[in-house]
Amino acid sequence: MQRHLFNIDDIDIAEFEALCSQSVNAEDHPFSSDIEQKVVIYNGDSIRSVIGTPQAGELKNELHHCLKDGPGVLVIQKAFPNSQVIDRATEVFKEIISAEKNTTESRGDHFAKPGENERIWNALQKFCERDTEAFVAYYKNPILRFVSEAWLGPFFQMTSQVNIIKPGGQAQQPHRDYHLGFQDDSLISEFPVASQINSQFLTLQGAVAHTDMKTSSGPTLLLPFSQQYQLGYMAWRNPEFIEYFQNNCVQLPLKKGDAAFFSPALFHAGGNNTESSDRIANLLQISSAFAKAMESVDRAKMTKLIYPVLLAGKQAKLLSADETKTVAASVVEGYPFPTNLDSDSPMEGSAPETVQALMERALSEEWSVDRFCDCLDEATKRRLA
Image (cartoon, rainbow, N blue to C red; front, side, top):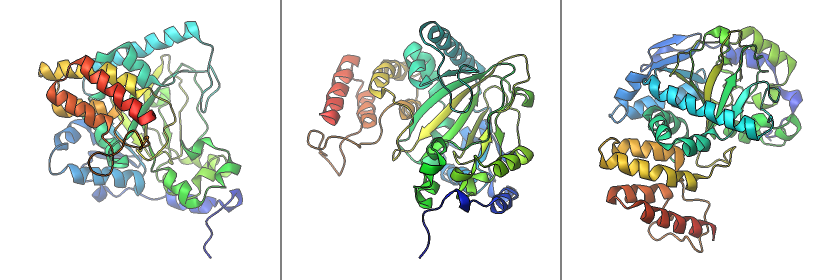
């Protein structure tokens, strides 16, 4: 009988080393512009030119292959070509941090000491609440939706946390991310290996550079191909694996507006910031429709905030239909479940209308803000009744 449950004694550094010694095959990434230190590099303009064309499916397949069967990490240069959009968002982030310093105590962090750096939890909602127009300008970026769908499919759930590493900020220990990267070894071993492997397909990690990041400022240290090691969630705390990471990881500089995306199973760690200025990144943690997101986000509240901005943009012909769908994809509930099927029964097909579909209908028919908000409240009540 094949084993399905493994424990910490089953990890094998030799197998890990063999996987991480692989090379990147350029023929597997024809849309890429370069390969640096086993990291596949794409040009943002090139990706934008493919979105919406017959080649879009081929590019999605390539990105998925890169994250799953390739090195597990890719960088998109000029993912945000308009630096004003980035700078405006950075100003909002700093305003939020300043406000929270006056009202809250230092909070814990995932892989750093509390208070050592500056972090905004649930930056997605806080950004939307503080400056909805700036939020829409940021999240209408088609690359965010395209890469998310390439890895997760439709109806993903966007969350984000802003991380500011101060001068002198220390490197993290190498780790894997959510889900199982946040669990103790004893608990991880209770999950069948199939579940451990499937965990990496439930989230996508991303980081948008809000400052230029020289390697001396500590952009993320990465170990290409490490996401392929099946027992990696039980291995990343092991001293042998940590030593191998430290001796073999790579680090690429990023320009403001670049974005990196990687599998949550990739061994990675933030680096030392030896510069005299902050290193600022918007960390995107994007969940599959089938997964539990890490953060609780009031998406109904955010939906009410963005609707008037999207409606005005549509009416003034400042936002295309695809841009409004892209913003909605990062905010609005797009999956019909879970719901209360007594009060929210399917009227057509096998599933009730989603909030994304409701918003698309409202924008198409140009409902008033009041009418849309009333219908959203009714839909929310049906789901929770």
